[in-house]
Length: 102
Image (cartoon, rainbow, N blue to C red; front, top):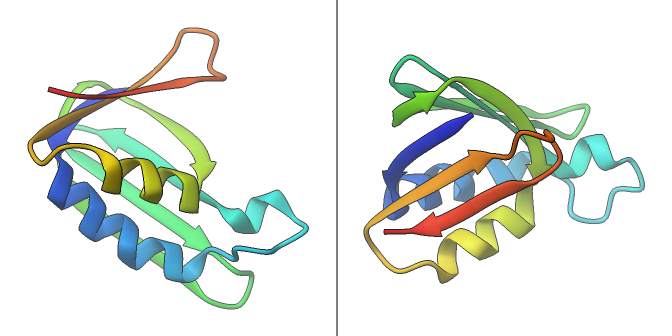
């Protein structure tokens, strides 16, 4: 997965998605957000087991793919990035995401 999109677009979508991710859950599944990039869009999905949120935003997708990441950490990192384009790239090992501002 390798995508590029506006920091504000990502932050707005994450701000909605973290509402469906439990901050203090003992189950990691409920604290994560699924990022699924494919053909010009990024899908963000999160759930508490009771409440679910699924939203799609436009993004430049250089390589399709999916990853589950901690929702609140990604929101905090995104908020700290400068306004402008940002890139998320899943590393070949499938365990790390590189997050950069342009």
